[in-house]
Image 1 (cartoon, rainbow, N blue to C red):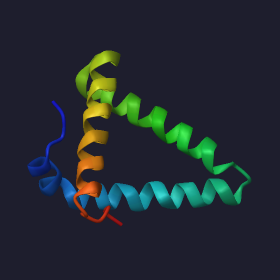
Image 2: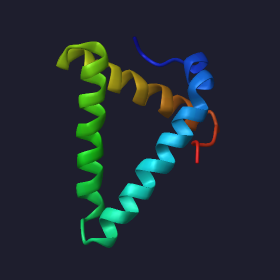
Image 3: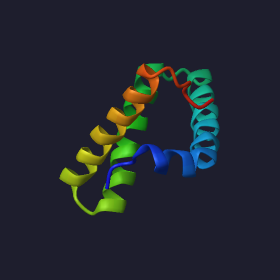
Image 4: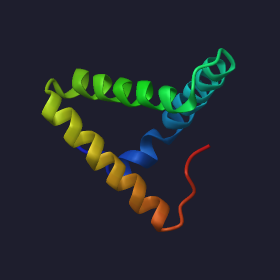
Length: 84
């Protein structure tokens, strides 16, 4: 099931906490010499594996990631700030 606006509002505190953890890890890895693009690739694969664990299928995982990216894009285009 894709994440819709009402779902986003419900889990916003979890999103913000997760972002803080991921950004902290990003900084730690970059300080150790890892390139930011490599951190991004790793994070993308992690998102895939998490979505696959939830949905049970690689195809459904990719679909969910696409749907979620669409929601994020719509929110940004509507002027909503990205969670910090």
